[in-house]
Image 1 (spheres, rainbow, N blue to C red):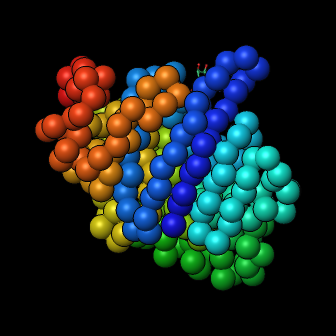
Image 2: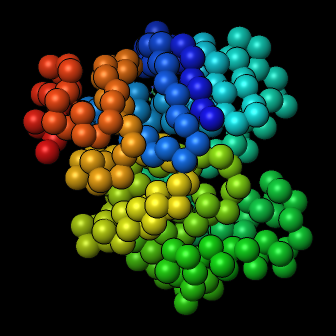
Length: 243
Ligand code: ADP
Ligand code: MG
């Protein structure tokens, strides 16, 4: 369902992604691991065209965009195929939890407001926040804010949800409730690409793990294979430090 071919990204002279190729099947949970500064966030951002790739073809669902000749129409369509969960939640401070989740349905998908709010309420119930729908972000804990962030991504109707270190800004006490919501999504076979340092979690939920270093994919394989029998010495060294 997702196919990325020869994706590269330069910031000025700095080559951050150097020819990335991978595929994700429908319902697959892919976890990306690797040292910081390696290009993991840039990769996710390129999938959504939050960053414009320097080269490469991104194919998500029915939409295919080649950086060599990307029209603004195809980029808009591509953006609708994925939704983002950010490290720092990125909620609207002046909107309630319910309004944050409904925003995309109203502005992007042009749903009638009452319908969008009803859908959003159901999704907030699914992430355990049915009693917090009228709270503003400042009235919510970090874990609750991130669950609103996930609910917003669930509402977006994209093919895939992209998670960029969704628990790394959280106080330790809130990490588990966010991981639990992600596990619930994974059990529902929501297609997900997750950048995380939570190795135990990665091992539990990933169908496939991609190890990235310095703008390259060094190795990819099943969680079992990567954790017990990595092919690359670099993967082995990283996992030895990280687990
Ligand atoms: P990771 O998420 O793996 O830690 P990033 O994708 O955030 O890595 O960053 C990879 C490299 O790209 C880093 O050297 C970072 O400084 C650089 N970088 C990221 N975003 C920008 C930007 N907007 N402008 C210039 N350099 C950037
Ligand atoms: Mg990052």
